[in-house]
Length: 102
Image (cartoon, rainbow, N blue to C red):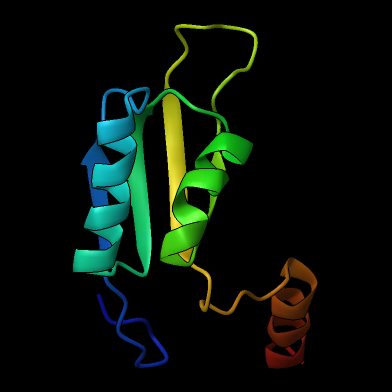
C-alpha cells in the first residue's frame, strides 16, 4: 500500500483463532521475521496486550489487543506494528489540519 506521502507500507491480516500454545506463539514470531509487515492485524486473538507484547518484542514489534481479561474464552483483534514505525500524535495531525485550513 502506498500512503499519500509516497511511503510504501506492507499491511497484512491473519486469523490466528488462538495463541495459547507455544508453537503458535513461536510461529507468530517466525511469521513476523519472515514477512516483515509494517502493520499486522490478528483476528480471533485470545491474549491481552501485555502478554502479546512479551511474545513479539524479540521480533521488534509493538502491539495493542482488545481482548477482555475478564473472559477466559474471549477473542478480539490485535494490531502489531514495527517498533521502528514512527507515530504521530493526534494533536500534531490537528495542528497540520488547522494550518492547512488557514
